[in-house]
Amino acid sequence: MEIYEAMAVINRAFAQITSTLYKMELKGVLAEDYAYSQGLPLREIAARINCYVLSKVNERELDDRNHYSRMRAREEKRRKILKEKGG
Image (cartoon, rainbow, N blue to C red; front, side, top):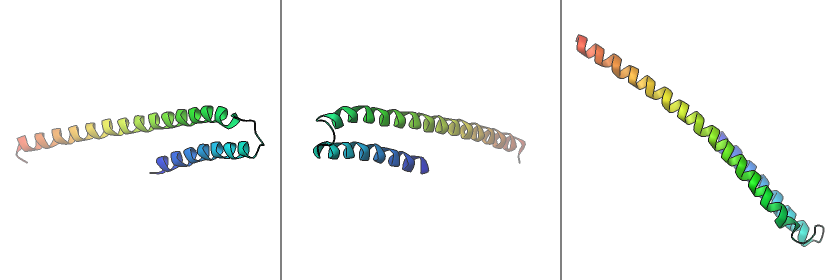
Protein backbone atom coordinates (compact mmCIF):
# COMPACT_ATOMS: atom_id res chain seq x y z
CA MET A 1 0.00 0.00 0.00
CA GLU A 2 1.33 3.45 -0.90
CA ILE A 3 0.72 4.89 2.57
CA TYR A 4 2.91 2.31 4.28
CA GLU A 5 5.61 2.73 1.64
CA ALA A 6 5.56 6.48 2.23
CA MET A 7 5.84 5.95 5.99
CA ALA A 8 8.82 3.65 5.42
CA VAL A 9 10.50 6.37 3.33
CA ILE A 10 9.94 8.93 6.09
CA ASN A 11 11.28 6.57 8.77
CA ARG A 12 14.35 5.72 6.69
CA ALA A 13 15.01 9.42 6.17
CA PHE A 14 14.94 10.10 9.91
CA ALA A 15 17.22 7.10 10.51
CA GLN A 16 19.59 8.38 7.83
CA ILE A 17 19.72 11.83 9.41
CA THR A 18 20.49 10.34 12.80
CA SER A 19 23.13 8.03 11.36
CA THR A 20 24.78 10.91 9.49
CA LEU A 21 24.89 12.99 12.66
CA TYR A 22 26.74 10.16 14.44
CA LYS A 23 29.20 9.84 11.56
CA MET A 24 29.86 13.59 11.65
CA GLU A 25 30.35 13.40 15.40
CA LEU A 26 32.89 10.58 15.00
CA LYS A 27 34.83 12.70 12.49
CA GLY A 28 34.96 15.53 15.02
CA VAL A 29 32.73 17.86 13.03
CA LEU A 30 30.04 17.84 15.74
CA ALA A 31 30.45 18.10 19.49
CA GLU A 32 30.41 14.95 21.60
CA ASP A 33 26.84 13.77 22.37
CA TYR A 34 25.39 16.18 19.79
CA ALA A 35 24.07 13.31 17.67
CA TYR A 36 22.51 11.68 20.73
CA SER A 37 20.91 14.93 21.89
CA GLN A 38 19.45 15.52 18.42
CA GLY A 39 18.52 11.88 17.84
CA LEU A 40 15.94 11.84 20.62
CA PRO A 41 13.89 14.76 19.24
CA LEU A 42 14.20 13.31 15.72
CA ARG A 43 12.84 9.96 16.89
CA GLU A 44 10.04 11.76 18.70
CA ILE A 45 9.09 13.70 15.56
CA ALA A 46 9.17 10.49 13.50
CA ALA A 47 6.93 8.75 16.05
CA ARG A 48 4.51 11.69 16.04
CA ILE A 49 4.30 11.58 12.26
CA ASN A 50 3.72 7.82 12.34
CA CYS A 51 0.98 8.16 14.95
CA TYR A 52 -0.74 10.93 13.03
CA VAL A 53 -0.64 9.06 9.71
CA LEU A 54 -1.85 5.84 11.32
CA SER A 55 -4.71 7.68 13.05
CA LYS A 56 -5.82 9.03 9.67
CA VAL A 57 -5.55 5.56 8.10
CA ASN A 58 -7.60 4.20 10.99
CA GLU A 59 -10.29 6.86 10.45
CA ARG A 60 -10.47 5.92 6.77
CA GLU A 61 -10.74 2.22 7.58
CA LEU A 62 -13.50 2.87 10.12
CA ASP A 63 -15.41 4.93 7.57
CA ASP A 64 -15.06 2.11 5.02
CA ARG A 65 -16.16 -0.49 7.55
CA ASN A 66 -19.25 1.53 8.47
CA HIS A 67 -20.08 2.17 4.82
CA TYR A 68 -19.86 -1.50 3.85
CA SER A 69 -21.73 -2.60 6.98
CA ARG A 70 -24.62 -0.34 5.99
CA MET A 71 -24.51 -1.66 2.43
CA ARG A 72 -24.57 -5.26 3.68
CA ALA A 73 -27.49 -4.52 6.03
CA ARG A 74 -29.49 -2.94 3.18
CA GLU A 75 -28.75 -5.89 0.91
CA GLU A 76 -29.78 -8.39 3.59
CA LYS A 77 -32.99 -6.45 4.19
CA ARG A 78 -33.71 -6.35 0.45
CA ARG A 79 -33.15 -10.11 0.12
CA LYS A 80 -35.37 -10.81 3.12
CA ILE A 81 -38.20 -8.75 1.60
CA LEU A 82 -37.81 -10.51 -1.75
CA LYS A 83 -37.82 -13.91 -0.05
CA GLU A 84 -40.98 -13.04 1.89
CA LYS A 85 -42.68 -11.98 -1.35
CA GLY A 86 -41.69 -15.30 -2.87
CA GLY A 87 -39.40 -13.87 -5.40
